[in-house]
Length: 196
Image (cartoon, rainbow, N blue to C red; front, side, top):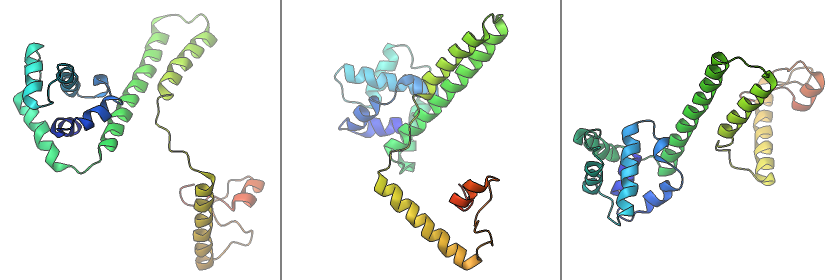
């Protein structure tokens, strides 16, 4: 869907937006990565992005056998079935790529620990932790909320809870949600509610 959106956009804006965020390696299906790389080649050749230009690039690289016409038609047809914003498609691809990288890092750590004797466990764990942190530092974080947004959110939540308390009644100890087992915490939070 994303590739077709890039190809169908005659202005080239979609490609330029996406190209700053994704690499060919981010695509799970290697065929999509090959097509995405071909789009870069089309741009570098100062050509208009089109299926015919992409096919020519694939032929020049002897990759046309990897990408069949049926697959290109499948990409073309996918365009008419979606209303998903481009940013959501990009984020989905990035998240999936990050997960795959994270899993591979963990597998490499396990494999390394089994293939060689670990003389310094602390050093091994430290290096493993560094590798994992490199991956996790690439995560998308939730947007930061301003204090007034947080305050409004909390007030609305408390109002909502108060309405529920009026409807269902308050327990004698004043705890309206699930108890944590820590009395001071329960007194401050009134217990945990729903998805908290």
